[in-house]
Image (cartoon, rainbow, N blue to C red; front, side, top):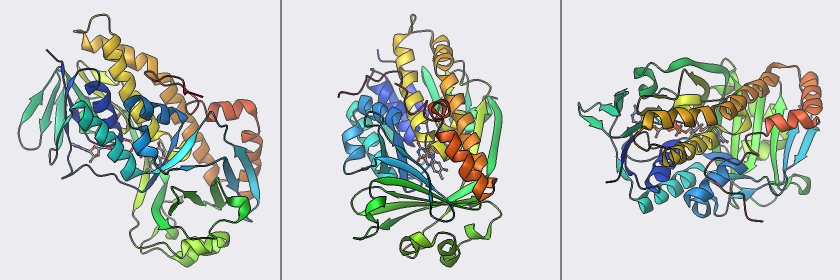
Length: 380
Ligand SMILES: Cc1cc2nc3c(=O)[nH]c(=O)nc-3n(C[C@H](O)[C@H](O)[C@H](O)COP(=O)(O)OP(=O)(O)OC[C@H]3O[C@@H](n4cnc5c(N)ncnc54)[C@H](O)[C@@H]3O)c2cc1C
């Protein structure tokens, strides 16, 4: 008889975990708090590691159809001078996709694998014996329970796994605008462009042929984060991109960055995955990649366990194998955030000398360049 799994949370990590388990023969049900599976945010960067996970789950084609595939990642200073322009090697892909498209692709993979999804189903607690307690008063149980319920994870909290949950001083306003001919000068085409001015940052990234993803980041107490958006304030900071900022609509919301660390990623036969276990600031664009990566790795660890009945030991082995990379990625993502509060000229020097150093660049891109468990080397 198929082993059963129940998953709290139908976001990027929850659906990747569900698909990976179901593809390995598990009978999987996802319990999602919202009334439908819905992606928060607009665009998302997916690096090589995350793309390989999507390939392994059979979700790559749908998720990346028409996606922007840039050739350079560029940082610019307050005078619109290039600080660093790093080429992205062709075998280390970075794509930007619509979050809704990514979630849709993972949902399709789940449907093909027979995953059941229950919406309007909020988890309020969990036990180490594979149980989820739902707000409706129902308790559901299975051979395996997984909390992929985001930064405020009730599963993590109720199992006593939380070591740290804090929010950084920085946050982001994210939006999508329609692109127009001539938006990018010839020298800007094909680039992910991170523009800095003081503690404000504007990320300009096409997501496909018709839309551009803008992320406006600043400190919590900066008036620039107030809504409705003071467009002029952002135009004054980034005049080079005035034509894009003018087009920002009113559907912005402020997103904070969370960092979560957990004592362990499981208790008994209940695990936590993704932001629930290890959220990180988005400076390296790896939170979603790591969530999908660890969901797949967990399914593989359970499949390869010497004794398939010993789920707790398989979960511990999974954590031991995957945790070092996650913690590395968290550390370097937090470290990158430190440049936010440096004076402009100092920030430029730091970025230039750090990213120009092969060792530092290797650390920054370590997760992006990894071959996640359960994936195969890309076909070239
Ligand atoms: C500004 C910003 C930019 C980012 N950019 C990138 C990027 O470019 N690339 C990247 O890889 N990552 C990025 N991230 C990080 C990425 O969004 C997260 O790491 C990723 O969404 C984590 O996936 P998850 O499934 O673990 O959690 P979530 O995406 O938060 O999904 C959690 C799901 O669980 C549901 N849920 C919550 N509580 C309950 C409950 N009690 N019961 C039932 N369901 C529940 C939620 O409704 C949701 O559907 C960014 C984050 C931010 C804030």
